[in-house]
Image (cartoon, rainbow, N blue to C red; front, top):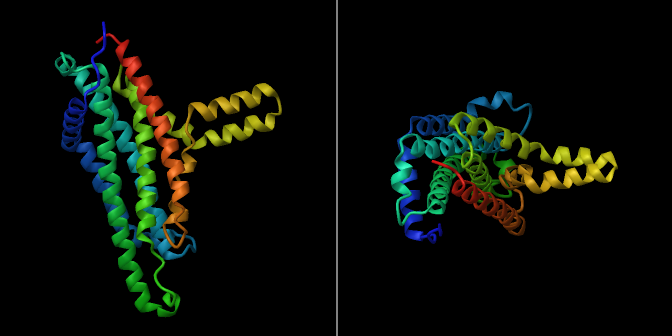
Length: 278
């Protein structure tokens, strides 16, 4: 059977409906509230910063909360929003003409990506407000330390938040790929967290295989590097948050890197879902 062409209108409608469904989920509200509470309350955890400068600690804490809770939100939301359509049999209605399976898969991805974008934008804005407030207080207490101006670069915080969102978009695409052939929501969530761990640690596997010396070991190292993105490349918060130079060329390379994996994972998810019996 010939597949219907992808429609931007149908993608927008499915993505919008996915976003509304995610906004109604209690898990979304819980993770968002907990992440915001941690970012806002980070200044009360200063005793655990082990000597790091206060603003640097607040920045690291905020981006850490964004990465951790963002990953949990992305994986669980992708699995729940995908399998809720299948379990409730509403997917059969959605897939009636002229909606195709590619529209359904890509619409779900865009909806989850929008959820992740709202999450990252909100936390980035709150983190910037917390840092600005605390910097103003420190400037009054220690004016000599801020004689050369402030240390916070808001455009850098925005860029770091954008990069974090790109990482979550890649994670959503891989989770959606798993969901396209998985038979249960639980398996998809567990596999999604495994992918998260692999992507964070794949550079260690590459180094280990490279030290092995053999051509086979080097081949497996290159294969792992191609199959799974290196999430360490997305950790720009340490460099961009406070006083670091904003290297837009590097940010652009990371965005293109993420776009390539998103496109590949979504294409495979569409192909897999077209072969699936519902």
